[in-house]
Structures are given as C-alpha cells and as structure tokens.
Length: 418
Image (cartoon, rainbow, N blue to C red; front, side, top):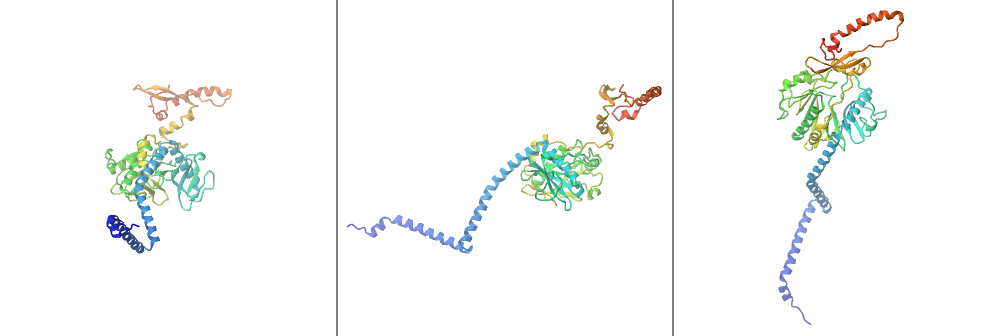
C-alpha cells in the first residue's frame, strides 16, 4: 500500500493551502468587524433594517433625477393639451361665474378652479362655507370645494356691475389644471420663494395677462424684461390708473418693484371701482395676495389649500401662447352701457326700425350711416289722417337735423345717411 508523506504533500501544495488559509482569515476578520458594528447598532435585526433603509435612500437618490424628468415631461404634455384647448378656459370661467352666483347667499367667494377631463372643482373662500345643496354641484373632500361635471355646467347670466373672472394658470395638480382668478381679492399679487421658481412663475403669469387682457390694459414697467423697455415705475403706475376698465376688466401693471413712496390705495382693501392689478416678484407691502414657491417648483396660495406644480408652466405657456383665448367679456347690461359700445350693443334691437347704409366721407373712406325708416304705428281714425300727414314732415325734419344722434354713431353733424 502506497502512502503519501504529509510533509511532502504540504510542500507540494503549499501555495494552495496558504491561499485558502488567507481567504478564510480575511472572511473571519470581516465577520468580526461586521459583528462588532451590528452589536453597536443594537443587534443583527436593527443593523439589517438600517442597511435596507440606506439602500432604499441611495436608490431613490440615484433615480430621483430620472423620475423628475419623466414627471416634468408628463406635466408639460398635460398642460400643453389643457391650456391649448379653449374649452378648458371657458369651462373654468363658466364654473367660477356659476359658483359665484350659487354661493353668494351663503357668503362664499370663488377664487380658483381645478379642471380635468370630466369635472371642474371650484375653491371658495369664506367662513364656514356649507356644502352645495343644489344640483349639479357636489363635493367630496371639503365643503368649500364645489365640483360639477363639465357637461352639466349651469348657464350663467351676466350680472350688471360685476366683473367677469380673469383666469391665469398656475400649473397642474393630480392631472388637473389649476387656475387662479385674479379679478377677485386684493389688487396686489406678489410671488415669493425660491429665486428660479419665482421668476419662472412671474414671467408665466405676466405672459398670460398680456395675452388674455384686452389690448392696452396690460402695462409693463421698466426692469421686467431685458428686451421689453418700459416706463419708470411711478409713470407706469399712473398710466395704469388712468386706463379705464373695459367690459368690467381692470387694467394690470406688471412691474419689478412697487412705487416709492407706496400709494395709499395699495394699503387698503380694493374699493369700488377696483384699481389696477399689480403683479411683481418678491415680497410686497400693503393689502396683497401672495404666491409661495419652493425649489421643487411647487406653488401655493397663502392662506388657502391651493397647491400646484409649476415646473412645466413656463414652457407650456411658450408653446400655446398663440392659442390662449382672451378673457371672456360679459354681455353689456341693459340701460347701463354708454358710448359707441352701447350703440353697437343695441344695433340689433333697432334693426326693425332702422337700416344701415354706407356713405363716403370727405376722405373717400366708406363709413356706416344710419337711415331712418317710418315706424308703422297703430291704425288711426280717418278724421286724424289730415293732422298726422301734416305732422310727419316736421318730425322727419327734426330727426334728420339732430346733431347729437348722428355724432353718437361716429358721424359728423353735417353727415347724412340720405
């Protein structure tokens, strides 16, 4: 029987033996170190829980940029679709106007709207606003958040002397487009918080006001944009004050700072009629409404539960600026409209009694002129025919020579439709 000498075997496999002994020693040392650390952390279970937590935090940190980019792209696509559709703006305006009329008896004042593909949720301000009792309104989470299906929006009748909603988009929340009504509340709107988020939101709000307000109602002061020269702040404020409201919509002043010294009307609640809306970045003094932003792009309206994400708002507004509809003007109330707008508003009512023709003025331009036709009155007795026939030429002569009536339609007193 052949036997192997142990010394010769060890000598022959010395490298392999020493290699395995070294590996075993290293594993033993690592185990002892891990055991020491685990005992200091409270045992093996506590150490394992902490390891899992740290791994999850590290994985989230590495995946956060990718998830933020995907969330930004998803929000951008949604805002471009929502803000580029006129029905989204109009449904939000109709819901706010209807909620204003429905909540007036209970002291509620709508200030914002959340619009998704099927419903509109209106946020109301007020003390102890009760839940809606009349259809088609309903509520889910809070009694001061009234919801309605977009297909069931009630008809809205314009109220004389009441300004229509003027909406600006603030972003999206839970796949719902968030709108703020700047026509209600304080006339001073300041945007504070993170520098980058604040400037991005400020420029987006300014662009929407410039696109939605009637021409000439948006006044831009100097220092707002490098490529937009503006007037000095005090001159721009005086200009905005001199501009009269149009269709119940007040002018807006977009400025980088407030006038110094601060005008007294800015430190008081808005009067009647309300002054111009002032939008500026940074903290303001006076009776104001504040939008708070943070580094993550979240925007909140101070004192309210309104919260939205505005990361993609700037790019969305840049893409759909041409499709943003103007602010919806109310129908002119009967008996209160004056000037050319009143004449145009009631032109259709006078079609039965008057006809429109075109004449050429001295410059050769065609201008509309009004030609009076005889109004057929009730039948008269035969004994009165002679008196009426004598009175008719006098009446036509007085009508044709009335200077004030022709001037109201843009004609000179010497112009004639005949």
